[in-house]
Length: 304
Image 1 (cartoon, rainbow, N blue to C red):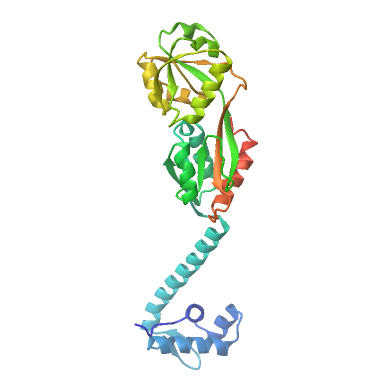
Image 2 (cartoon, rainbow, N blue to C red):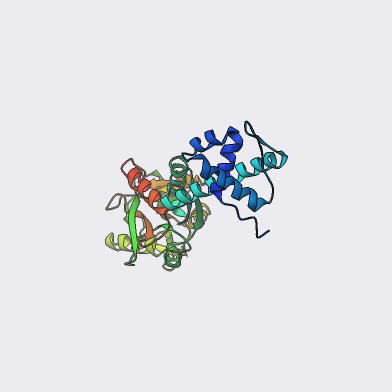
């Protein structure tokens, strides 16, 4: 088996001659002269240990071995061309795989829109998804387990680059029958001394610190009956009547029964930020077109 070491150029010469059945036309097709083409075919026959053509002074014909080898030679050349094309596309970023980390809240509305956009505009790039809290995404970016993350600020790592991809308002989530549901817009003061489901300072520090600052500024002191990190778990407790919560507007897409959402007056009006974060020295070529697409679409409203 070690002797079967023919070259692609030999296969190309053979295929051209087999299709043209004329060495002169085959050579012209390959932009070469006839003697080098004949030499390549002779080398190929030597490597294989069989003759592939029946030649006379007037005709060139494939023999049975040549007809079989023509099918295989075409297949090998197609595979070689496919491999070269795939390699170039990977290297240029036209194709490849991106592993994307995301928070549960970003999966409510922004992530589906982003995936739809990538599938339409970058069909040769595969997006692999990993749901992670922001802290875990930081570690995954450092270790290379994800290429890009959708997470909450702040980002205090010099090796990361980031792009703000979303801002959104906060809304109040109230149990069915809560008197505050009759109000068109609620304020932070409306939660003073009322049962409230708060974010965990460990698992949801971004929202915990944001609401703590807002409540302090409004001199409002809710009664924290639970501390949770996942928004869908908080809304389940709201539905059970345990207390109210404040969640990003995207959570309204969950459409939970017995949970009433009301706008919340805040400064700024859309305080919730979502960042796209990646390692500045990432060597994944597929990352560049994804980032370019994000930047292009921000101007078209993907951040709202």
